[in-house]
Length: 71
Image 1: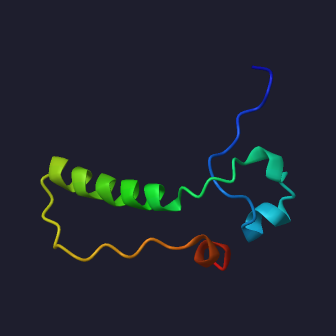
Image 2: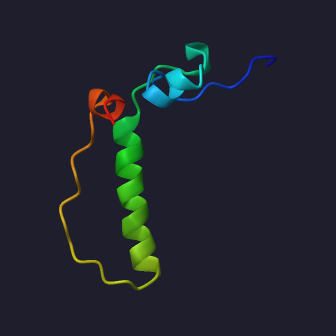
């Protein structure tokens, strides 16, 4: 209580630096894999709910924190 919530991610992407966002606003958790997996699960479930036939393709590999910073 009395403290701002922190984003559950790693600070340091170029946009964060340009906006001068304090690293204290981040937890420094690398949750990229969980977000990546949840996104593709959402796509799968949405397709199923909408009765959309999705051609199975391989899910892309989860990007590393370094790859995300270089985008």
